[in-house]
Image 1 (cartoon, rainbow, N blue to C red):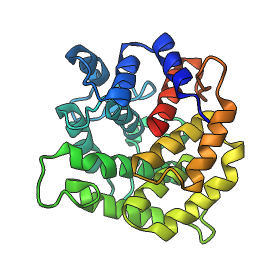
Image 2 (cartoon, one colour):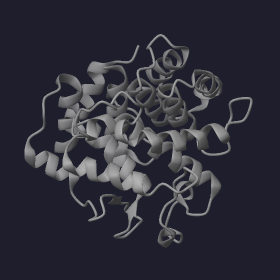
Image 3 (cartoon, one colour):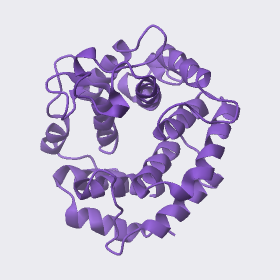
Length: 273
């Protein structure tokens, strides 16, 4: 089994103030102090998105989704900063239901976010649709339509789901990067497209043994966030893979350098706390 006590100890020992506040929220639901929230929200562009380190001052779909994941760990999706970010994401959807980065980022965006690339388009669509699906109800006051997936963003999410299912091959594979699988499976699970979601998870099950710890952590946190039962084989396999790859110091390796090991470890805690 995953050693959650060891993982918690790793975050306490190596995390910064925001990361330790994320841990406290995940463990006990304790709201972070205002100064920590201000640090987590810093850098938001006037239009509501957050720029990436490679994007200059231009807001990025990918970076905004990453920041929403951090704010989710702080219980902050209902705050004004997250609400503006979600509104910005919804406004960035193309007519066909997909998302792309701003064309101004074509020369600086990494391959997974490159404007004009169909694989990047599908990845950004799955990522944006996931956050609008799970965060939408938290972003608006309670109302008679909040039971819909995405709450006030339900129409946006439905259009995105059509894009995701339209790109899904009969065997459950998809023509894009690996994370598109678990992000799409999560969105489609919420949309009650259970057959399509199950076909995707079957592909993920086959690939689990070859996935990096960071990818497995992201997968598990994503599927747990939408209420997939812990007994489902995909999550059972994810726990086994993470138990086998946990380091002796309690953490897991990130794919983006050791400065992100705490982020990966928090994803595991988020999934299996």
